[in-house]
Image: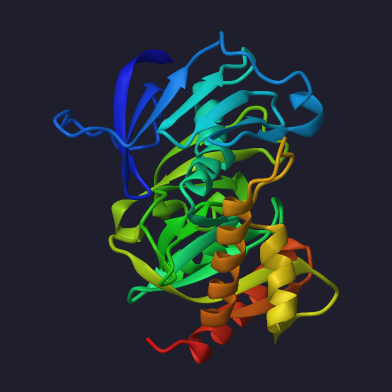
Length: 304
């Protein structure tokens, strides 16, 4: 439902929203100035070629259309405007808003942002990086039953010291995966238009990271016929990170400051974080075996 203003803490900032986001915890203190606003606005004009390009940059803002054709105008000055699709529930709209549009806001603020889920143990973080449907969330969910805490769902924001702020308290999973760890969650909200029939699962507090963590390793899940983890050389790691990081595309003119900072951020990350390719079979019969293999690799390489 679109109602009065709601406030939430997320990624270390205070957000005010026209949209009630039922899987986030509301903030009752209205004394502090907000860092970002989510504003329903069906009247703003977007570029005519947005449907074809999906993302169009300007100097201080950008337009983005997601795969459900929700349109967003994102400004680095602290506002994300959106046009609500009639076919989406509030949960689906919120899940979309808190993914790529929010990532682009931090990118415009010159942060390093990439597509990954993240977990932590003793303030050391591990990221699982890749495109949608590569199993990032299912891997993270597996680790929650092995004394790891959850940091982020699909969106990682890392500073120059490779510290990643506490962010998400939800994860999107199918019923099959939910049933493996049902006790980890306090509520489940269906995504009726989701092609993978997932639900937004709100994690219980005991499974959520409560502090900043430093990224020690980054794994790139890949479907393959063998089970193998191999360390990536810097050039290979750059390729994967480049393809899965937020960057300036479809610009009407050169934006050299964003290009320069993006390359500095990605280079700094590679020089300080071990990156690995994680190959495994794409079937549920191999799910536990492959994740146990990954767990053993992380534990043997970690300095906890």
